[in-house]
Length: 147
Image (cartoon, rainbow, N blue to C red; front, side):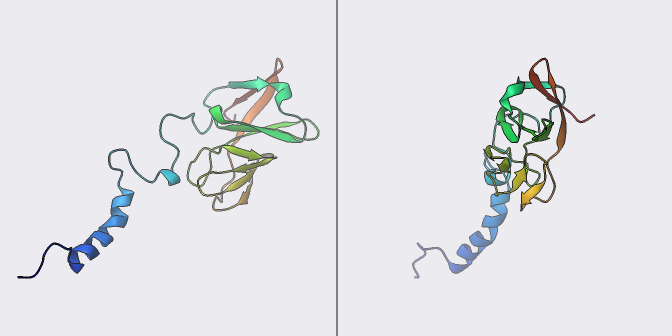
């Protein structure tokens, strides 16, 4: 009688064929974490109401500041004009957590965006960041949904 303690070729091939499909189905809270926002509750991709971020002086001319808690990046041009964008990557919805100068870098797949224009500077993202309304009010930076 043949030894049946090892898996047959058919069993191994069947398991290999099902493994990719199983990876796509969340089980017990598991899934493709690298392709989606981090677990838990996060701020919405864009503010649904005006949000006060911080002091107006936090963003110097020619620079940008990432407000991770609100998924927002604010930049100030050399002339002093403020711009704000959602800092949620348009490729897979990951919150961007790194700002290098005025370049936002997505941790999931490496997309990069210009924080002063919202434009994609490195794929895989192909859609620019969503622009938000922004103003300095009573010495504070306030962002909100685009009017």
